[in-house]
Figure (cartoon, rainbow, N blue to C red):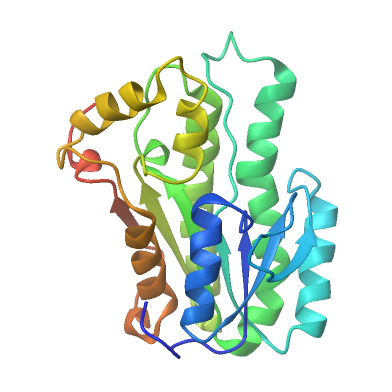
Length: 244
């Protein structure tokens, strides 16, 4: 990520660990001031607001506090996410509702609360979504539904707020070596075998890297993407190009 490309505060949801933590660190390198929204405190010492994104009112209140004291809200990166594996008739209602609440409703609440402040600054929103927001797979009903909704929500917000100089773009991620995919595969009897099998099935035959996600976020936050909004950028080793 080029240095000193950002000024002002950038909210990073899910920034305490995994890809979110890598993104928050990259925002700082670029000259921005990351503020983490998460259930857990970040290890890197960044400013932190404890928020459960399934509580939309709490999420909105946290954004307001940050905007009032952060020296100018310039951007939002939504990297928080959760999953509940299974088919529609397998996933308990509580698990289904939490996936949608965190991945879609909570993210929408953060962006909605940030918009008035971003309009004043020519703000940027980058949503870390998923290839599964473009294509369906077995046993991921709640996750796919939430990411489909999130991807199209961001397109809509991009259209509505383009005249306000707010850019909204989506990263459509495949499996990476950091983040939710790793947490889920850690539950398998042989996590490394599962990851190797998934990687072998990707066109590029490897998992994505956190540094590659940060580079893509950097571009979408930067002035180099000044005429880019409503885009869905696949970052998945070629997976989206293949019929599933």
